[in-house]
Length: 204
Image (cartoon, rainbow, N blue to C red; front, side):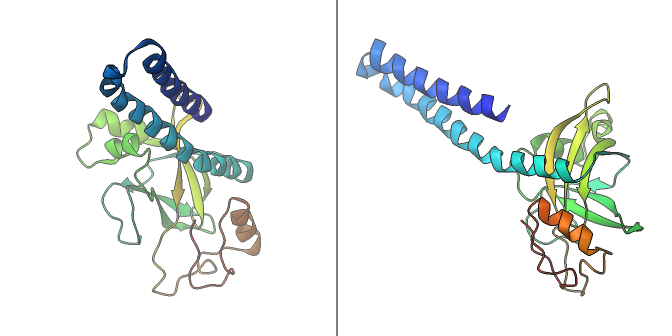
């Protein structure tokens, strides 16, 4: 889909330019300029989707899908998170199921669909669409979230979530029960923690 979108916007830009140059006089240029600029802008934006797509692939090669229900979530700022955030989900720590760790959308790119359903005033039928989610990852590092298709048999609306929890209180990967094997799996998807017992970890 990313490739199709990129090819489509580039084809639209080339097509519009060809029509303007070949078939129309220069006097029509002002009519085409906004569409040329917009199609070029969308092509550039489409390129920004590729790094996230490659990361999704690495996550799915490392962690299996889980189907989770009634996962705590919100659109307001999470008190345990630092930096920018545009919605969050809390997942159980694999090492300590009674402990929940937040993962966030760190930027607003492609989060509109999720934001509308996480909003406090979202209609019940919209909230119901994220009552069940597909999740792959480790909340101590990174995760991939998706909403189910209408029949519930496949994931859609895939989005990468990041770990940005506070560490001023001395928590670390070791405090979260992360083993060297857990850290190695995190490295496979691009996470670069300095060491398992570090006071803080580097987020992508």
